[in-house]
Amino acid sequence: MSKIFELFGYRLDRWNKAAVKNREKAWCPFMDKECDGGGNRYLSAVDLKKNQRLKRYFPGKEKVQAGVCSLLLREGEQPWIVCPRRLLYLRANTHSEHQSHVRKQLAKYSQIESGKTYCVWSEVKIKIETRNSDDEAKSFDYTFDYIITGSGRKKVADVAILTGKSEQATLRDAEKSGYTVASRGGELWVDDFPSDPVIIVEIMTSSTSGGDKNKRTQIAMAFEDAVIDPSTHNGPTINYRQVWARMASQLIVKSQVGIAWNGKTIWLLQDVLANYISSTTALDLSRYVAEHPNEVNILAFGYGADGIKSKKSIATLENSLFYAGLIDKNGSNGRSDGFIEIVKIGAPPKIDHLWRTLFKKKPCGSLTGKA
Image (cartoon, rainbow, N blue to C red; front, side):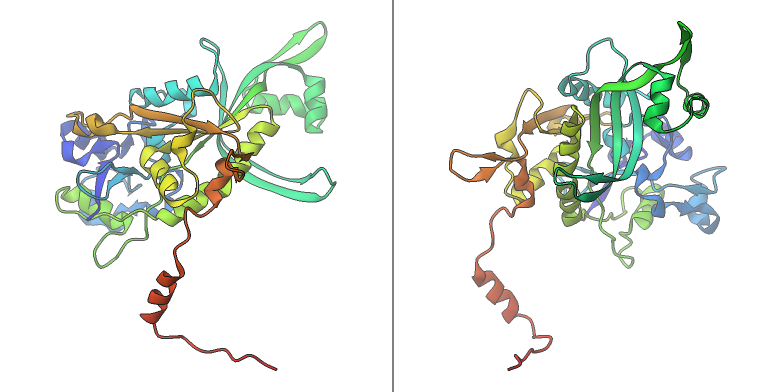
């Protein structure tokens, strides 16, 4: 049965006094602030006013997020990370020591220059109408987890043309967003306007299943039981198909966008998710282990056997592999391959499997052809 492996950053099987104090604050050691539910689990917030059984574990709080970082599906296996903050958090110049290896590897394969400062934006949503090479209208509606850029000087007059606003309105926007404006030679400049290089960072962690209310495996229930008695709770499982669908629907598109912006897109995954993709699609990631970025780039991290055996109460992700390759290419076997294979089936089942499955089910109806 699935168990919660990490709660508010601390391993349940290494629970100690520091973990208790951290839990009382509902604190995330990776963000260095109160847990926000990971950005995608707002519905799992627990109202403590309606849960007196749990309230005493969070003194002074009225609501907390179910701070589940990862799940251990079976003993002896690697946990599955279910919170993107657990893998990497880049906001507000927070540099958790527990994510130092992840940041170093991201900088290495993004080809970020040592000693140079880059700007980071989170949750960047772009929704616009675009046109393709045939002048056909297309819509673009995507949100990027993080965008990292360089910075440089740009005249306020040029920024105004770019934004379609007056120079006065542009100055107000610059002040509101915290940019530095300086006067040189009678002209106003934005000293830290975003510029090349552009690095898109996408974090893909696993989704949980809905869980079973009767077995108390819904995420909020599992969280409650894990807080009260870590040794006896049950957790939800992983929604494998949803993870694959989310990944497949965005991998190629966001990689293409990085190329179009003369930059690159780096996908951050957990190694168990990378292995799952390789085992269920036509994409065999082991063929794409690389040292340099390409059109599609994936950084996969894991706890590793040593990390799981470690006596530390907060585990670090130290195992990593970098995969890179073309979106689509003609292989030596004459067929088209590349990362496009993530949207292709690994191997279709034989039709005998269909016949066996249908034989075990009663038909739901019939259809008669009309002459």
